[in-house]
Image (tube, rainbow, N blue to C red; front, side, top):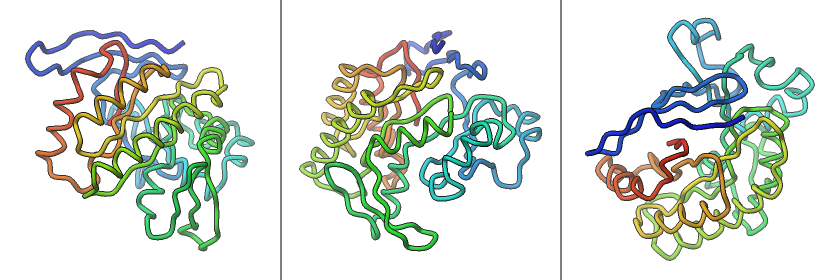
Length: 244
């Protein structure tokens, strides 16, 4: 059901063109993915998005869980019917939102305790909870729950977060069971090249149909971001899609 086809690759830069097949259509990569945080792209209707050539939309697990809730979306027939979008959808894990709420969260081995940005109520999200929410939302691509560290950080804490991300990735992989939904692993390791390379190698041992490169565009310079991407790219599987 999910298949990535490499169409062309630049021998100098490694840049790739490909096609990723999903239940709701083919995604031609590279692709820009509009963000529909709460099941809508602000100021845009689904027909307008189609008219401008959008192929896939991102939905946010944390925000959809907070409001209106994944059960309501599931009762409405899933995220595609809920938002009137009949093309591919990717849902993130909620990990980045936990990072952005750093002043009101507490990271534990079993998951993350945080307070709602809406009313301050206390919540706890485990890797299994993130996957369960995404399965109820019914996206084509789900993301494993990860820890996105703030920058700057030490190599010691970066490794701690990377190891936790790997443990959570395994739990997500074992829990995930929805047919027709691809689960992607997420590469962490902050700005430490060796940790990034180790992370992707260990994620490959778990086995995912695609991979996200997490923990970038979180305050580092463009030069630092490109350095990590250049170092990591040769170690990423060439026969699978990537998400940044």
